[in-house]
Image (cartoon, rainbow, N blue to C red):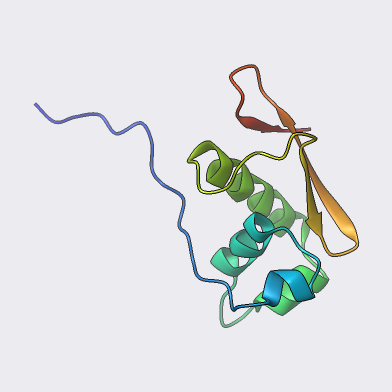
Length: 99
């Protein structure tokens, strides 16, 4: 009998060395931005002026990275995105959830 897959790991990509620090961006946010970038929409463009759909996808991926243990959850649920902040709240089970 086939096993039901209930969890699919979120795609993780390499972020150029120093990119997150130079952009004052949390490494999980930087990874999510690079993961959704494409030849038509660069990581720089997404970082600088994200669409609402891109913002939602970055939030979803950061939540997944935290849930998967790729990055530790920030106690206050705040993740830097340059001069902006990505804000997540902790769920009852300790995983990050959107505010």
